[in-house]
Image (cartoon, rainbow, N blue to C red; front, top):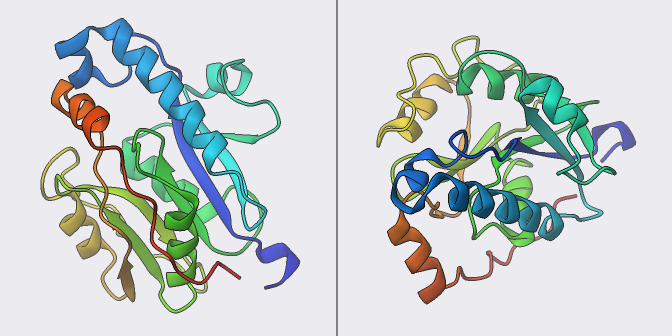
Length: 213
């Protein structure tokens, strides 16, 4: 792979203010504990996903506060998420790719089961597909990636019903004309019951697959 086509893994993060992150979880366990969980979960994911096979970058929100934040590792490149709904923000990240050319994967930071093998497998799928999606158990998804060998559809993320059981299917529909692969299915933490599940049954290691080139 050419030097300027180094794969990029972009992690979307929010400043962990109580009442502004993991609000569904916060309604059950309290907004302060939920924000604390998100902060430490995010930092653990960032530490776990550092790898010489890809460039790890942060897409921060709110823009100005995130760019100046002392919470996130200072050595990681930061880019603002910008305005708009989730689809608008992810669309910009996939098209711009942070910096440079090459394949791009975008994930959130609140999926406890993400491992480097999961990411390597997704990049491997992009060698033979235009796009990759990592399904979540609730009908959404935890990962989306684009090979960027050709332009993404103008209607990408159009009419996606976010935070619903239809988010994955709607996104796949908006990628019509693209060759789509599916990565591993994972689950996220939205309710107190998910925290109990996490303690009782820690996530398994990711899939074994050829590393991204």
